[in-house]
Image (cartoon, rainbow, N blue to C red; front, side):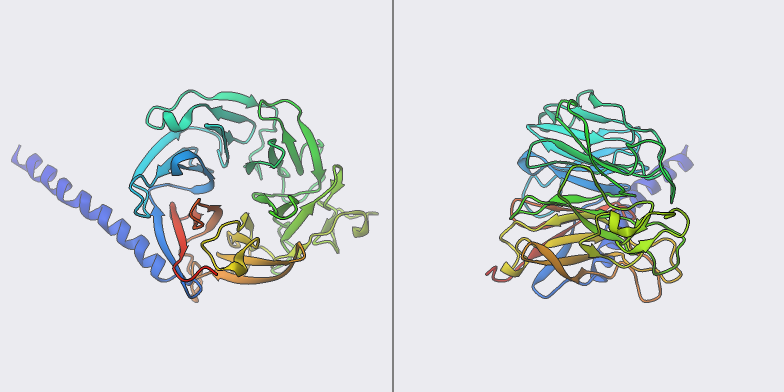
Length: 375
């Protein structure tokens, strides 16, 4: 019995120490990240394994989707000190619930093969209701199966269905597509095809034009093909996969008699394998005026390149509604020695104009603020 008491006391003493050590580790990572002058970076929330897509609910509630973890979380900064002090598990045991969208106190969650909905969710965070199935006709293949989910300006749900392969001609039209449907699951339609793997999109504030990323195919070398930023304009558009990459690179295996001129080219090319995921046009007033209506993109980072690249947040600068330049906004997750400290996934603008950035490697959400004159 005395031995058991000693063990219990030891566990009691060690547990808070481990929690502090974990927090201290996150803070050490933050110190190694680089932000522009006038900006600060901090930990908004942690203990969110595999944190990926973010959605903003009422009263500052932030919903967090995951991939392989299978859980959906909610966090809230209830005392407005810049750090989330409330954490809830909305659901667990789901199939790659990456995509999230929020509207009228309902949380929509995109799993691999379906979209489900949690009603009156902000009123029941501690005891979430059972979900309602909105749509369940998506393919069940998990290769590029996780989905991004947003409500568009037309109040319809938008998502993408990735290709079930690295490079192939998908047998069904639903694969490699951009789709939308009504909030009740009706009115399903395919808007565009030829999209290999998109896990992020947003609408430009000035034009309502839809811009989305696309992750290029593997095994064409370190520097080919480029990852893409695309603009969707017309129902029926085809963006090239699997026949053409980057707008002008014919696929060595599948192009056959196809030419790249047949397809819609990207409006911006990222470096190969940087894996652009979440993106967000900045609409707020906290950041300096030169950031207004510019596009933040989370580059998750390469996994199949001899020298890794990505692992950063970039700013794609727009002029006359089109991208013209790209610059680093936050880096440091990839060290000079090649060590990976974190992998940014999604970006969310908060009501005060600050940005949240999820990191699925560390299971945290960072907060970016600007402390100077806002212009």
